[in-house]
Length: 127
Image (tube, rainbow, N blue to C red):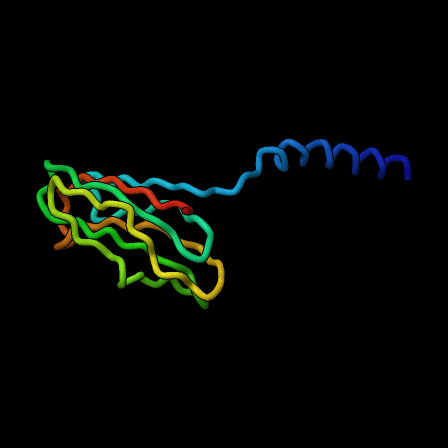
């Protein structure tokens, strides 16, 4: 019994730093570089999100900025707010649709013609 108590105390001591460092992620970034055909941010959680970003003037093509949300085991594009952004242009703060329940979102960047050669940056966040 005494060993079991000591083991439980040690396990709790290992978990405390993990619990203390846990945080709600409310902001994620994504960077598309010229060697990639697409890239995505990590996920953020909520009913809706706000995204923004820019396509570098050195990009060879337009870039799609697409917010994607998770529902019933699948990620879907928020087609109401996707943006096609030309080289040197920006996406100002864009609010996604609102989902019926809180869910996971991420921002997907991909060149318009699925070519390489684009440099773009975006963020997705809570309010």
